[in-house]
Length: 349
Image (cartoon, rainbow, N blue to C red):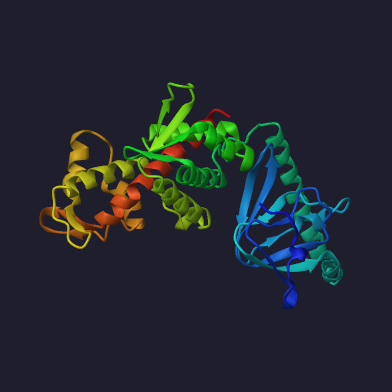
């Protein structure tokens, strides 16, 4: 993230100011004199923790931030840090202007606002205390934050492309070179880097061997562009609202594997295959796998297939966008593997 405040950028009419991607709007603990309304773009609220940070929320156009400091009568300090994820236009509203507005309110309405704000402030303080004590935070804890994933994938792509050697159809790179970039230049947590390398190994995206001459670890991959494809996907996902994000359940993932196996036996026309879903569901039932047609809903939401068609004898068919599915499936599989790691880490918190 780049340093600097919104006042360092050019002001626009109507109090609109612009932040560049990565620019800090304010830091936790700073004295506050304004609140903000987001006109365009996205901002991240976070708290620094060790060499990284804990992501609190992502705010979008139409949302307000910085208002809680106004209701901290003693210090008026920022309770979190805020930084732009994308280029952001914001309206800055000074606390002096808020004072004038509050002075004109009916006394009962002013009391209501102050009471609600005080309750929220105390709740935030309790949450912060729990976080500092590592108590009760497992439900929302993520070992790999979205920012971690995007950063590490970017490092993997850049280092393999710029420093790796192509040997017998595989790109080879010393792990020490990746660690230098990740830990010393991009400030990635070493434990997270090690876990991520293990995850990539488990998913057979990379192979890890030991150099016989100096006993150092060597990483290799068939195609470094895989890291770039993954990085673009996760970077896009983090900017979407939850209901817009790709979500494929583990059962749906298994369903997709079976679908691709069946598509290998059928003709492909313009990247699409007509397939009978009823037979696939019946095979799951035969082996008591507990997977039904309802588990395929995520695939339809992801546009891996079209609408279902009901034929004679209750046979259900659909059209699979097989080229798109095959291109996206490695991303789906890796996303679910990443979710499993986060879930396991949360349980062990």
